[in-house]
Amino acid sequence: MKSLSIDIKSDLNNFGMDISLKTKAKRIGILGASGAGKSMLLKYISGIISPDQGRIEINGETIFDSSRKIDVIPQKRDVAYMFQNYALFPNMTVRENIEVVLSGSKEYKRDKADRYMKKFCIDNLEDKMPRNLSGGQQQRVALARIMAYEPKLILLDEPFSALDNDLKDKLQIELEDMLSDYEGMVIMVSHSRDEIYRFSDELIIIHNGMVVEQGKTKEVFSRPKTFEGAKMVGVTNILPVEVDQDSSIKIPDLDIRITRDDYERLDVKDRIIDFVEFKNKIKYIGVRDRDFKIVYSQSIDKNNKDVEESSFILDAKVERIYEGLDMTSVYFSVQNRFDKSKIVKKPQKNYCIKINRLENKNNLFVNALISISIDKEKLIFIEN
Image (cartoon, rainbow, N blue to C red; front, side, top):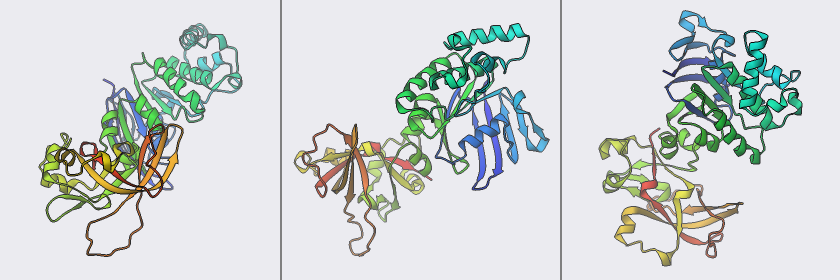
């Protein structure tokens, strides 16, 4: 049974690593901002660096345990680490870069290198030096070397970070094809949501050296449960909530309330709790920029009961418009109508909608007064 179990702590210069996780997934993505501790975690797993304390197990075998003074050297962990720059030996040919990780007779090394060079379509490059290879060719050589080594676990440290955008998609498809028949576990570290979403079955989000989210990739992207996790999966609009006196959940910044009736209709099947417990757990509401919809006064009846039950309608003013190649970002402000008796000056908060660049924007301009619709089913409830 493939498995990975980590429970470690380390004091670093700028923060402390405190990682606890268990997984049996074959394709694992680790997402986090720069400096969150993603690459450091890979170094702990591979044995390049040892944590201060804790335990690491791969497939039930202990490779690090500070209490038992176990710290298996990297060469004996059966873990392959592909660095961002692929770490090919610059003074060795393609063939030599593959054979150097193999043990056995000269003939055995040659035959195995032949097999993997052919499999990865680099047999015509065997005498070339790394400096004479393209980025894609270097990646194939690095993967051929890793697969020839036959590790239990492969670690990919931002394998596409140094590549041009037009090459990234092509090489990610190639990488997935080349790993398709590998039966071991693969962990990819990245700060790219797209790369992680396409690659992984299970997602781990790290923030300041701690795991803040773990679960099936599509589920975490769809319904993150923590503030930092929501930010990492692209939820740009995150708003604090308050429990109002009438027991509804108030979102002051958007001038809306979530009632018990709303709760009964919402997609919260993963939280089998009553409304009272639910409203006391929720600290923030997240709304993706694509889940705000612009509507115009002539196209919506705010008093329509069906509209009222399925959506929140906001009165808003356009503050800024940014045209992109494919999408247009529209920043808007919402007039806060809560607590009108209290005159409190607060900085204006702007929220973002993204719309198709080709969408008709004749009535959309800075200072335009518009209505914004939010499908209640699309709200993301954040607990921490």
